Amino acid sequence: MSLLVDNIGELVTNDPASGEGQLGLLRDAAVVLQEHQVAWVGTARESPAADERYDAGGRAVLPGFVDSHTHLVFAGDRAAEFAARMDPGAGTRYVPGGIHATVAATRAATTDQLRATAMGLRAEALRQGTTTVEVKSGYGLSVEDEARCLHVAFEVSPESTFLGAHVVPEEYAGRTDDYVDLVCGQMLAAAEPYARWVDVFCERGAFDADQSRAVLEAGAARGLGLRVHANQLSAGPGARLAVEMGAASADHCTYLTEADVAALAGSQTVATLLPGAEFSTRAPYPDARALLAAGVTVALATDCNPGTSYTSAMPFCVALAVRELRMSPAEAVWAATAGGARALRRDDVGVLRPGARADLVVLDAPSYVYLAYRPGVPLVRDVFHNGVRQ
Image 1 (cartoon, rainbow, N blue to C red):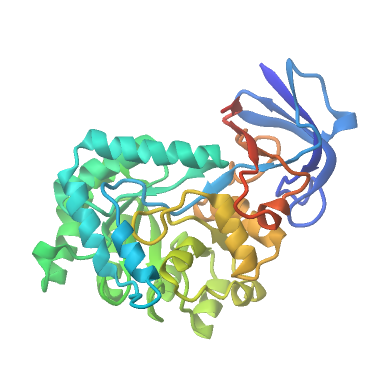
Image 2 (spheres, rainbow, N blue to C red):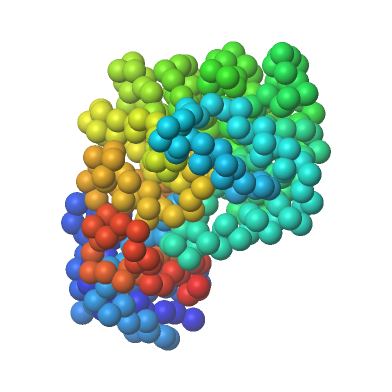
């Protein structure tokens, strides 16, 4: 069964061979979807026949968003912590220790409860145009709880990430090296069947460079791809470690030195920016302009989690990137689609060209620019995922 999506006012393909500029823009365009893939892309006047037709009504169409950094498997909330940070009289700076509250709630929750929360957030993201999502563990921090969190993450998405090295759990306080040994050994072995990636929070208050390298090396030895929480709270070794280890992405990148930027620019490691975290913690935003000027590949993601970025909305992150990171609308949309795909080392999503997965978003607007031009407005009219209208 084939579907013709036509009467598209503006089509973002992210394929410069198909259209204008980095976004591969086509106007008065059409797309044919067949068997969960894009079969054809071009102008409406040249479109082939198909079994069914969807009239886009002159609206903008773009690839489904690729959210390459989320923490959807958890229990409880941290609304009180958020309120304390936002209190104008007594606002407190974010430190990693707040994660322990979520760890306690997650350990106490049943697997069915964790699954319901994660699936609910996944459905929420899909309604807002996210068709590919990475999902981390990291709130279990015991062998049993990390394994069940990873199992839930894998049920939500094949892009599942083992983050046993999120923080040191309270029962290992003062024994970080012992906990790293557990992460690299028994915990990784239990989580591996459900994980594609391994991640580590390389940060003061979490894990230092040597500890982080040990976690990444252990994951790589088991065939997992590498990701790094890097330079979120302070300048440090995270971004350069990501480059050294050939990680797919260095995520956050809030505090980068010129040497960090140069290292990223000379590598295949994507700098994944998470402006929802800065919005929710009142931290400085990363310098996207310096990264882009140096030629670094930049992705945008939500960092959806209960403590520091409780949003599943990629359109919101696009708007933040334009306003606060000083990215152009085109740069932000590319980063939220093709950039996220690069961060997951995927070439079948984040793009609309023959052979790509049939994931596309129809905006109730004439242009992708409206994602930043009309912030906070629910512009996603329809979502097609694997060729199926959701």
